[in-house]
Length: 141
Image (tube, rainbow, N blue to C red; front, top):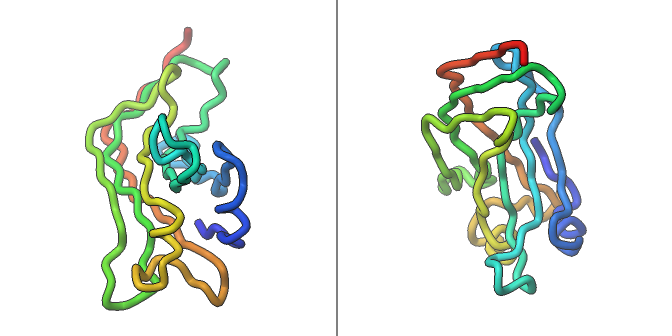
């Protein structure tokens, strides 16, 4: 997923979001969900980029669960810089908890040219998520 016009996105209000197109994995609709988060609960002045995996099953559908291993990544724009990543294993998505993610990086750090994650000339950042579905269940309510 590419977030275009990152400089504009970074100035939007807390909780502004971007979502990727849906990809189906083992029948589950998955999306990357990027959101502007406060750096912490007591400081809404410093914004950070939160990245989550969203299992976008409508709430009214059947009871469901999906156990996954996930790697969230900000893809490096420089060949000598590693992707910025966060991994979680065996988290369960279900009717009650349909997203898992992480407050990744401050926008100041994200857009720092030395870090290598922001393409200033194209004003974009590339996000990626690697998912392994370990167990998937659906059943009638």
